Image 1 (tube, rainbow, N blue to C red):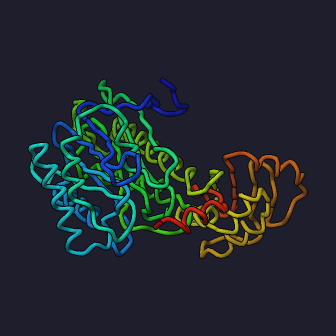
Image 2 (cartoon, rainbow, N blue to C red; image 1 turned 90 degrees about the vertical axis):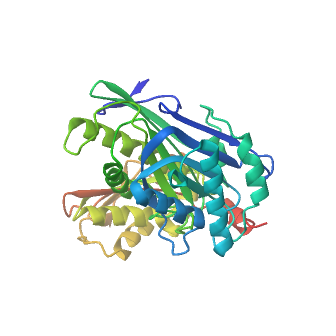
Image 3 (cartoon, helix red, strand yellow; image 1 turned 90 degrees about the horizontal axis):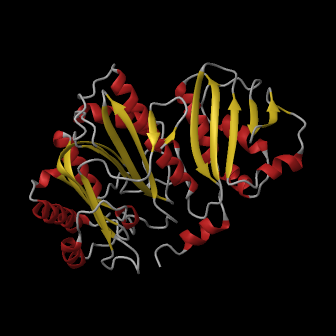
Length: 402
């Protein structure tokens, strides 16, 4: 296992926590690719979720939110790609309920322990005959097949697994996500799932998830669009048998740190896999007047189409960065801003500094680009992730429907 510096958890090879099972298969929703799957715990699990802020919230997202809000418990999730079951009216809602009933019957559990997640084309009804025929084919495996079943324009699944020790009990956290386009803060075209065998009450888990999503998934952007189906769901089935996590304890802090890491890694993997992207862009803002200002500025920089296009063109045009900072309503001192790109100073006290253009452009060939902004205006910080804007992004989205 790889020990991470200054942490009390370790990254490990992909594996499901104790008591979790999954599967992913092809049922004809996509051409020749896995498009249908499930994820479940052998016992009911504490559950928490965060969801898209788009007003046209899709039936699967709305249903799963209702189930989790009911008593913060889930035992199983049914997932599909290709078709979002969004903007499908009363029929779409009935189809989501039918999926819930079918999976509940298969697992012999109450329907209120079942959630549904869909992603894909908006406006199309699910082919329920394919769903019904596919359900018997799902088997309880320990494979990562389900991580492929939720992909749309993604080039690959996003996964991460860590382990930590809580009061002498080994706890595993395993997460996976999909997302490539229509990615923007406050949820986007992404689905994220984190499973753990830790013992933690649902309301405590909800607070942890909501807080950590704000500084991870809500700090990524690809294209500024927020979709209709998106959610992050965390399930904790208590089978590690650790003492129940309580705020203010060492175990709580360790687990919270591990959860933040899992969500952050998944978020960065989504940003790096943005539609048509060739570069992951990370922005770190320091000495901001407040945490909100730091986050706002970092998010604005990685979300700027002008900045993203410059990164794609490997052009260290810092004017696009400083103008983006000024376009926000953050509290700044316009005379004290420093900007670095890949560790090379470009701006000091809001004025250009001499730099080797060829050297900076050479670093912009890399697949990971770092923009550092020091505001010299407070003690807070912010961080966000995005990607470059390429010709391929337009090509992919010009023909998405067809």
